[in-house]
Length: 243
Image (cartoon, rainbow, N blue to C red; front, side, top):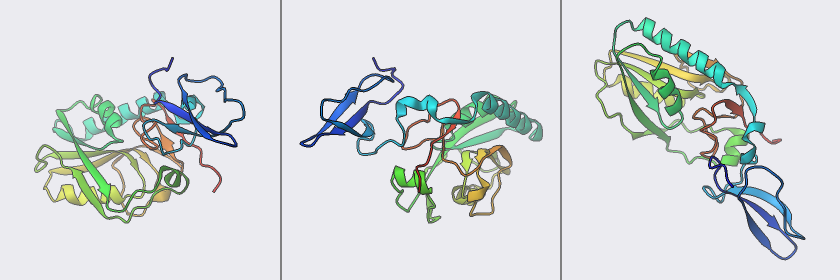
C-alpha cells in the first residue's frame, strides 16, 4: 500500500530488447526487476518526464539543515519582534507564492497584532531551466520579473510585510519592493525565512531573517524541487551530483 504522501512513482528499466515502466506501489523496500532488466531512473506520475534527483520515497535520507524545532523557535521569535516593533499597528502580511505559504501561516499565529494576509505571485520572463539544471547550477534569471497574481486588498497607507521563503539573488524582492512602494504603504518590511547572501545580485536585505544558510539546494517547509518536498516539516539539503 502507498503511504499516500508520496506521488506515484515509476521505475524505468530496460533490457536488450525493450524498455519497461514499472509502477512502484510501496513506499520503501526493494524493487524486483523482471529478469534481464536493469534500472535506468525514477520518474513521477505528476512529472513523468522529469527524473527525480533522489528516490523521493527516501525523504528521510535527505540531510537535515534545519529541524522543525529550530524553525518553530525562530518563527516565534520573528513574530515577537514584529509585534514589539509595530506596537499596536495593524499589519498586512503579503506572502510570495508559492514557497512562503507555510512560513506565512506559522508566522501569522505568532504576531500579537491586528494582522491580515494576502498573496502576490511573480515569475521571470526568462524560461525556467530544467529541474536537473537548476539543481546543479541554480537559476539566475535575467531580472525581468512580472506579476502573476496581484494582492486582493489595497496596500496604500498600510504596514506591509512581504513574507518570503528565501532571499537569494534579490531580484524578486527588489522588484516587489518597487511595485509595493509605488502603492504608498505606511511602512514596508521584508521577512525572509532563509537568506543566502553568497548568491546576492541586488543590494537588498530583509528586515527579519530566520536563518542565514550556505549555497545549498534546500527543500521543505514550503520550498520545493520540481514541486516535490514542499510538505517536509524540516528544511533539508538535496544533494547535487558532481558538476
